[in-house]
Image (cartoon, rainbow, N blue to C red; front, side, top):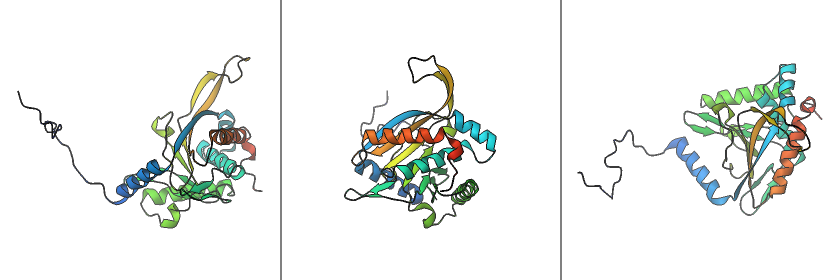
Length: 238
């Protein structure tokens, strides 16, 4: 019987590959480590009712349900700028412009390009901008102006069959929203009523608890639900 090498417990396991992290992957790793070590992460989960948002997408035949959901987030941030903000450990800054980072998985790692002024674009401008920035990132042709200056981040893992996630805040921002896969459930929030079939999107909101309280996160979620309950108002330019 071969003696077990305590100093190298993987000695009898065939190694497939060994490599050092470098380039973009190393930058991402250090970025996430900084966030995890310096932010006080707290995550709130909620099912968002998206039946009306789905119907609106089918009716208008413009954009996707994700486009409309991001727009609803942008309008909510406009109304509640506490989360449209950055915090460097000393100074907490809230911003007027809503510049949303949308996480994209590339062969070189996760990249979060910025959809600038996401609350003020027309639906055509929004869709074209998101399509263009996604193409740039996937082809690794983005510039620094395309990935810096974000005020809030969205991570969508619903397309990968994920229900809930605990995303890590993109520093120096103070919050990040995770989107899960849409499902249908017989459910009711009013215990005096019988459950009905609803289309739901699991949502995870991670926030820096040093500057955002749980009640503030819950208020954000309710405002967002109000927005997606009235999708016909999402693209009104004020």
